[in-house]
Amino acid sequence: MVAVKLEEVSLFYGNQAALRELSCTVGPGQYVVVLGASASGKSTLLRVIAGLVFPHAGRVYFSDVDATGLPPRKRDVAWVPQAGGLYPHLTIEKNIQVAMRGRVAKSKRAQQLSMALDRVGLVEQRDRLPQQLSGGQQRRASLARAIATEPAVLLLDEPLSALDAGLRLPLERDLAELHRSRQEGVAVSSGSVTIHVTHDGQEAMRLADQIVVLDKGQVVQSGEPEQVASRPATASLAAALGKSLFISLPLQSVAGGWQDERGNAMPEVWSQTLSKLPPDAQRVSLGYYQHQARPAAADVKQADDWYDAINHNVVRVQDTHVFADGRRQ
Ligand SMILES: Nc1ncnc2c1ncn2[C@@H]1O[C@H](COP(=O)(O)OP(=O)(O)OP(=O)(O)O)[C@@H](O)[C@H]1O
Image (tube, rainbow, N blue to C red):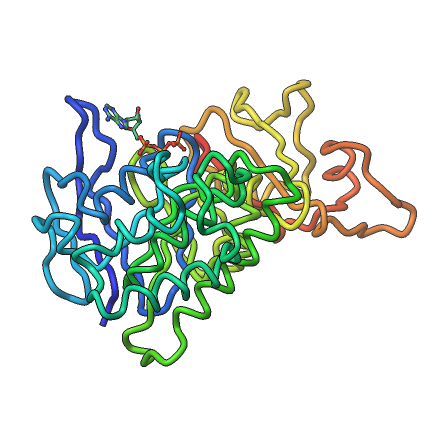
């Protein structure tokens, strides 16, 4: 069984496509991070899953049941928007109570309220208004409001953005812990799902069971973090995900051969890699992760730049990633 499935979903704003025949699946209990640059369609994807907008084509399934046309209140989801989303004139407690109306049985509401406040560490702040909380506490309050309804699917839109580094890491740990605690006492086959949107590759690497990479409204790659990082689909993704600096060398095709931007011809050791490039490509880039660059010759201690590295064979050919027009070859 899959917890959430999107099948060839398209959504347009006017005649501009925000999502283009997008398909993806989320298994029970998974923490999925949707990673993409600005305007790649991440928030739109969450809004489609939440039922806040309806796709123009394609289907959305929850636990194998078609939910494409269902309004938000009929879906077992909670959506935490990018900023705030709390009613400014209501206390944190009241905000949570409002969210539970119609979703949680009256007899269970007091218990759910305490559980939610406790899990995000805001028991003592329950009587404050949102503006009386710090930025990090406001994010926690939004989370508390979302989890009070015990949704099967928790949607988080950039939950860590615009927070100081000092607040980000503790909240990041709390998100992981919250996800784990939502699985307690639940059969594996019906585990709760978290879908978290970000443009931060390192955040995705730390949190995700599965990373889904969006580009221009399409899934360009998905898989376990290590799997995605070891064969990144695009050069920009490689730069975002790597454990170390991703060093990239742009090349251009000149008179049937490849040159770097300074006009240096590529050395012979690269002929095998370069022969795999599309014959009609004009511009490509070769890249490698710094931590995979190992000297092949004893007299080479360190390469100062890419050209040094390849000339001294510091980078092994099999550790090199080749992209044409930004896409992996
Ligand atoms: N309400 C709207 N009306 C018109 N166009 C929209 C609307 N919402 C989003 N778009 C457009 O749809 C595309 C995808 O936007 P979306 O907000 O989903 O991207 P995103 O990846 O979440 O971006 P960001 O990281 O900057 O929030 C963008 O080109 C955006 O300009």
